[in-house]
Structure formats: C-alpha cells, structure tokens
Image (cartoon, rainbow, N blue to C red):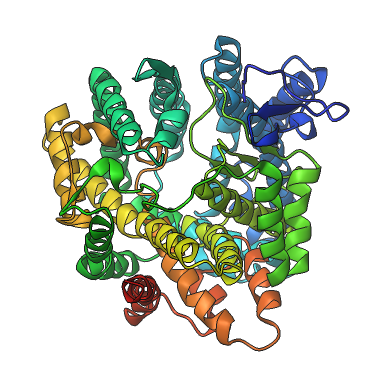
Length: 611
C-alpha cells in the first residue's frame, strides 16, 4: 500500500501517534517482500512468468488423456499441485502490490508499481488459462472415476466448484482476450475510481479534509458538525459526478457484455455463481428483508426521531450518537483489549490467532492522506498471512470495525491450510466470522454495562449497525439491480442515478428519515458497486446467518466453539448447506431468514421498553 510512509521492516516497525488514541500500528509487509525495489520481488516476477510458460508447455492438451490413463489420479494431482504453487506465487506478488497501493493511492510511484504488477501478472497468467477450461472438457464419467482416489481426492471440492463454471466458459481464445483486456478494461476503471476517491478534498467549515475524516464527522455529537460534513460530501461528490457516472456506466456495460457472452440470464447470476449460492436463496433473503422494512428500519428511525424531538431526522443524523449520552474517544489499546477479551471469552484459540495481528504488525490503523478509505482484511496467500486495513479514529463503531475485520482475519488464517485453490471462502460465508466477531464484542460490552443511559446507547448503536448491515445493504443490492437493468437500455445520467438512489433509500429508511438536497449524490462513493458488483447482499446474508448462529450458541452445550472454528477452517471446501448442517441451520429454508430478522426486532423492542 503506497503510503506516505515507507514500507515497514520487521526490525523496526513504525507506529503513527494520533492525539488521545495512543500509538496506532502500521503494517509490516516484509512477510511478502522487503520493498518495491527488492531483488526478491524482481526474481519472483521472473520466476512466475517462467513457471507459467513451463506449465503451459507441460500440461496443455494432455489432461483428458491423463485422466483416462493408468495413473489418472496421480498425474492430475501432480498438475493441480503445480498449478496451485504458481497460483500462490502470483497471489503473493499482486497482494504485495495491492496492499502497498492501498496505503496511498495518490502516490504516483506506488500507482505505477501496482499497475505494472497487474500487467505482468495478467500476461504471465494467460499461460494458465487453458488449465481450468481443459479440466472442464474432461468427460464427467472419466473425472468422477478418479477424483475420489488418493492423492487427487484432496482437490475434489475444487474440481466440483470449477465444473459449476463450465456452462459459462468460452473457448480458449475468447477467454484469453477477456483476461488480457481486463487490465485496460475493468481493472483500469477500478483504479480510476480508487485514485479519484483518494484525491477528493472536502471543505468542512474552512477545514480541508479527505473522505474518512469527513465521514467520521457524520458521527459527531454536534448536529451542526454533522450537517456541514454532509453538505461538504454532497458538494464535492456533485463536482465529480461526471467522472463517477462515467465509471458506473462503463463498468455496468462491461459487465453486461461479459454476462451476455457467457450466457448469464440475470444481472446478478455471475455473483451468485461465485458465491456458490442459489438465486432463489438470495431472492428469499431480499424479499424477507424488504418485507421487514416497516418493523425494522422504519420502526427504529421513528423511535430515534422521537429521542431527538423531531418528526423526521435529516439524513445526516441517521447515525448520530444519542442525545445527552457521553461520548469519548476510545484509545487503541482499549480497543485492542476489548476485542481480544471478547474473542477469548468465546474461544482462547480464536483470541490467540487475533492477537498475532497486533503482535506481528499485520494491521495498518492510522488515517493518512491518500490511504484507501474504509476497512478490509486481505487474505494474501496461504504461504504468508492476512493483513487488516483500518482508518481508526476512536469511535465506538471503529472498535466494532476492528472486531469485524479481525473476524475475517481469523477466518483467513484458519482456512489457509486448504491451500491457494480452496482457502478462499464464498462471500456469503466470508462475512460470517466478521459479523460473529462483532456480535461477540457487542455482547461482552453490553454484559458489563450497568448504566441505563450507556446501555440504551449501546443497544441503539447495535441496532443501527444491524440495520446498516441488513437493510442498507439490501437497499444497495436493489439499487445495483435497477442500475444494471436500466443500463441495458442505454447510458444513465447522473440525475437518473440520483433518482434511483433516493427512491430505493426512501423506501428502505422510511418516513422518519428526511433525505435532504445533496443526498442524491451519495451513491458515488460506495466502492463495492465498482470493485465487486452485487457483493453487498453478502453482508445481509452474513448478519442473518450470524444472528441464527448466535441463537444456537446461546442455547448450546459444550463444543459449539470447536464446531464454529471447524466451519471457518473449511474455507471454500464446502457448500453453505454443508457447513451450516452441524448447527441445524439451512439457508434454503425461507423461515431461516426470519430468525435473524427477529433478533434485530427483539433489540428494537427492548429499546422501546426503555421509554
């Protein structure tokens, strides 16, 4: 991540000090490479290109004959093992470049480094494209005859997974064209979005700020500060709307072209396939959440407006702290201990894994000019370890974000032994550990809070987080669907995008939230729309799933934590129905979603009872 600070070395990990928050850690990327100009990085780039060429020459055109040969299981396993090792090396290279870039997307040197890495990795991996395509051309009977045999059986889940892609694959030349043009196509537009967002500056009452500090002001205790922050966001987004509109139109069209060539019927079908989740399961989730808007978001915001003494809250007060409740900044050490203690109360092993992120400098926490906004956990590759990016500013929600991203990190560490091909988890299950980590932290804090005002504030904050995770993300999904469907009829103007945004948000938030002028531009900064179309429903899936899981945990006897960690350790080797079966849960059952939504409703009822 190209930050304004140098990449850290293991010998001298740096720490940025923020007022009242203590020393905030910056990550040490040397587990991947020592520096951009390190001989190890240059050597691995060369090695990767050579390995890809050798792999192509060794295995191309031979896989079906090998599968039907006398040693089919052994020889196919040898090919997959070599492929996986190359995949890990390619992943290490691009992970390093990507993390370095995220640290400062405005640094031209780091931007060039990342762009060059993308081009070289894309060129090298072109020699690997044949492999999955050719595996999928093997006759079903021939492959099924050998995939249960040792040593091939360890990759059987991966082989089953890639065969789900078979109906949507093109011939080799077309796949190579799509692959090579991704650098100048989707990849380039993603990079333009990132660099545009990072370069934006917002004038808040005479103070010039980057995006993250302005978003932080939207949670200030002073309503005037929140209003001015919102107006600054609206103004700067409005000034850059042509760029964001062009990016959105181009990427939506790019996706439509890919979907049409591959034969996907619905605008979100490719995401469902990647998530290994059936369209009807997602449709059931969306329908359940939309039907619950009146008893969840509409009901809660009506209650919150009453607390503020108004009929309707302006949109900048949607996440405002409760009036007359003391707010304080939470130092980094306190945030660390809060999360680790909560994790330890559930599982000492879970806490031990999470502690490594702090002790071994796997976290980058400070806000810096140019740094990627928001937060993420990047798994990198199984031969290394994950990294977490935060923009920590000491708010209670920042503590929950830390708990969330560490949940991802623990999940990624546990899944890594499955190897580069099967460690990645579908997004729907990838959000399970993160949301569960938040829930553990919230419950631990709530249990030790006796002050009625503080307890009310905590419950309200949790309800808002859940509404943001479930209601807001389903509204995002609905917005994306409407945009991608409408884009098939031609380009959308900024005004059309704003109208769709306001319509969807009005429906989801309800009459107690007043969307003021300028809010129609707020779609522009959501990175998921750009980087991962239709990703957002995974948050709602994960939250409802975790609510159900947590209900099982509360009633469980001994052994729940072990079953839970085993679920995480499965990585991408099992379908969601398989990993949930030991807990008696089934996301294909329409009633499943009501369990999770009922937990949110129960918290709102608890708040109402405090009135």
